[in-house]
Length: 129
Image 1: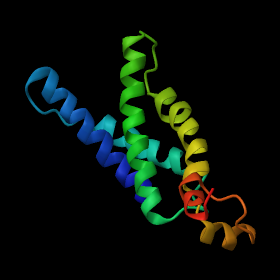
Image 2: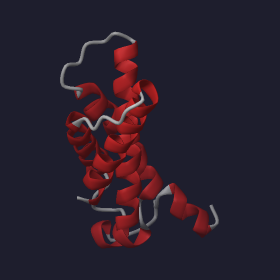
Image 3: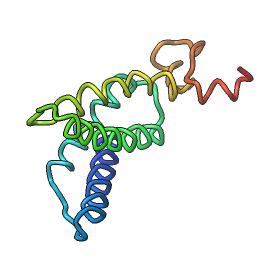
Image 4: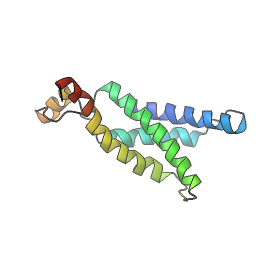
């Protein structure tokens, strides 16, 4: 739920900022909030058992940003995706796979897999790798 909430807040805030920049007034679009929530959930799915809560917030926030920009990219490229399934599932699914390799916690890996040989990239810096 941390990832979903941060994805929602990030996507809604970013879309409101872009509407303010483009039209001069703030427009809160609930479709960005709901798809940002789904993006946060998709982004966290692959790593939910092996990451810390702070990493879930980071992953969800990045998922919200990825959703907004990939949705805008599809509009720019004139690719029709009425429900934004590609930005939500494809783009954030790719990000979710990458996020496992970045944020896998040694403590959580030990609990889940009973070893912590292959930790996330951010944690491997602390091990001298």
